[in-house]
Image (cartoon, rainbow, N blue to C red; front, side):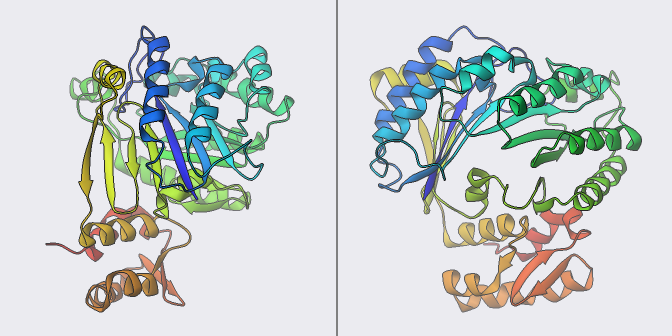
Length: 381
């Protein structure tokens, strides 16, 4: 099984914290779809005939397009992949990212004519003060209404994105955010610590003291509250930033963490085939021009055994399935396994790791130091 990610680069406006490739313009919406379909034709053999069981439209803001237009892209991507034929099986996961202000009764009605069966809503916060700080286009009331509109239409496989550690936020405000999210009956929550990326408006404002800074201690307190409140309400923290009711983990994203091959389409999209990673250029004009000529627009890196091992350690430790010592021994050999095992006792003594039947998992405390834990187990050339 494999997956396809489709990057839609358009937004109504740029959020202050965002460093993803996106454009606060819709000037090229129509020609972009033509280029995207051309890329599908060029890359249809990339996955080597494997059946595609997940397809994810992300961005940017995919919901700026009518559902019917996205359905056409989805049908083409599946029909041209050699491992797919006919209509999609009900067990497959087809996700659409949506902004709350795009979810109207009419839009939801149009979704009924598509294969989408999972929706990821970019809410970020149920506080209007937070939303203003982030330069989001919707209000808290619109966010709540968006979830209810999907529920009313019979859609329950819904995920929402939340951000913690927002400048000016407080622990009570974050708790209120979580209370609202949990009250809405949403089976999946993705929650991320706000990162101040270079060359973003947020970085500029903090540097010039036009915004309060991001405070590490506040993020830690809010992360601990996130773990406690979701756990108390029956959610599994199946990945550091992802929480779900049993049976509702995101299949597409889980494939990323488990090293399953996937194809990325659109400018800046990444692909992985098990031995190499490649990424399209983050330039819309260049991307569309290359597609019109039928040319490749990606860079590629062949992964070394060391890189593949490091990636496995980093991604597996982030999940509830953990890092399996027997897999390391089988896939990378006894020398790498011995190096891995030698690094374990210190991390367990610090209270950051626990072990069960040869599988190593981060403790709640260890989740605060996930990158450090992984780096201490890395192979270095």
